[in-house]
Length: 319
Image 1 (tube, one colour):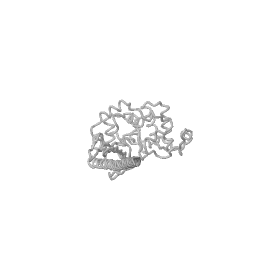
Image 2 (cartoon, rainbow, N blue to C red):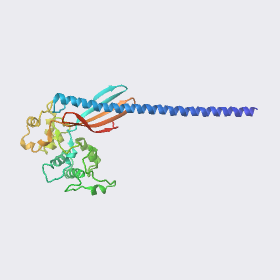
Image 3 (tube, helix red, strand yellow):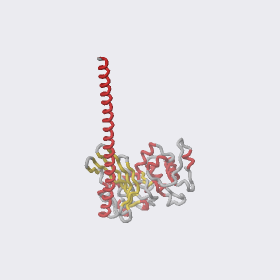
Image 4 (cartoon, rainbow, N blue to C red):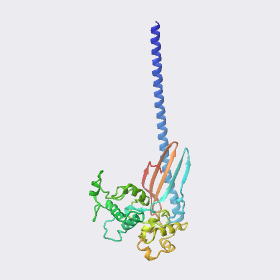
């Protein structure tokens, strides 16, 4: 009888242990489900917060166009740095960047190099690389390789598909405009160190035009302005001009040239690539809701009616 009672007790204890283990597993699973659901809801909220930052940027820019007309400069509200907006259970942070304060890589999509005027962006880009202390011979090769990557079907190609098919990870040339300046990393001759140095000066806009806004070029990147003048304007002189730029910028390119006392021998053929207006803006924003964070990078285009359209949008990356 005692033996039977002992077996019964062991059976009961085993059942209790199994039930406890089962309840623990159920509780753990339920807790994970709740946490996953909460995280998913928070992430969705963070995404909507990031999208709201894009919409807010559009409103700020539209108000700028309404108040100040066509001229864009760093004294306007859109250029405010470190914008942070507390929201329910989170925060939104972001900035607006004039996308015409950098060198547009797609200006190198040049069909014929025999046309000196059309090929001028290639010379400007080569000069930019030179001013950034890239070896002159290497700078010319990289500039040419960048042009060839987008225009591999044109004449006078040095760096065509065969250049990239011979790599450990074979690929073809793009044969189209770049969508992001990160694509420049794939160009023949561009290594990681060079990309880190040069890419902050580059952008990829959906146009073949090369127009830089003299009102918004960063004073920390005078090499851009110097390159536009083919080094007829020294980097130090370009830095002085940008650091002493009027608070509200210049109202026209002629005002910029006159105020900077740039003679015809310096200006040369740079004028077609200078502007005080901008049509492209980059919105970089990050958002946090609860413990979830996300980011968004949007390229906006200013239309002729002063409205703004979203050209591209990348989500997920924290700014």
